[in-house]
Amino acid sequence: MGRSIDALAVGKVIGDVVDPFIPAAKISLHFGSKQVANGCDIIPSLAAHRPLLRLLPTTSNYIINATNLYTLVRIHISIKMVVDIPEGCDASEGREVVSYTGPNPATGIHRYVFVAFKQRERGRGGVVEVEAEERRANFNTRQFASKHALALPVAAIYFNSQKEAKTRTCRRR
Image (tube, rainbow, N blue to C red):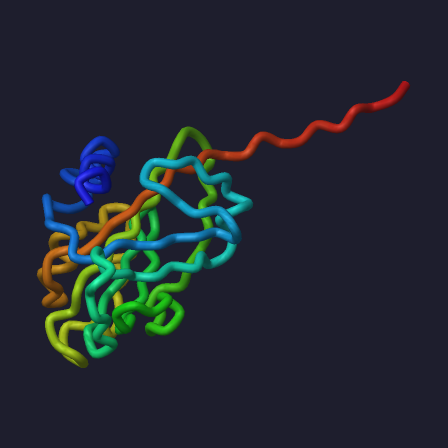
């Protein structure tokens, strides 16, 4: 798990988005057949639809406890949020509070970060709704977690995306 934390530090996810944490899970993130690794480049058209995202234990001998619930936040200019995700399940098993929208960067390279938090108690600590100010570009992960009684992050992953070049067609004279 050391490499994962190192990649998060290099990508400035640790520092900009979250404080240092000890991973207690890992995020498996796929857009179609493309598996996302920290810092990889994903073209917007590939990430246009909701990804397959699963929270997995960090060790193979861990027994999954589906009563443990997690909140997943995707941070960029806008956020995406799913709460009450049972341990070991796909994020689609949770309750979507803010729906997924794919990357649509106008210029430059944009970083998209997924952070998973363990909810402190079942039915308490899950986010019921997200206020308008929490949906803006100045979203603060630390304040959000504190406000909604979420524990420290258990996992994070990020990818980069930039505007796709338009395909040119040749004109015949």
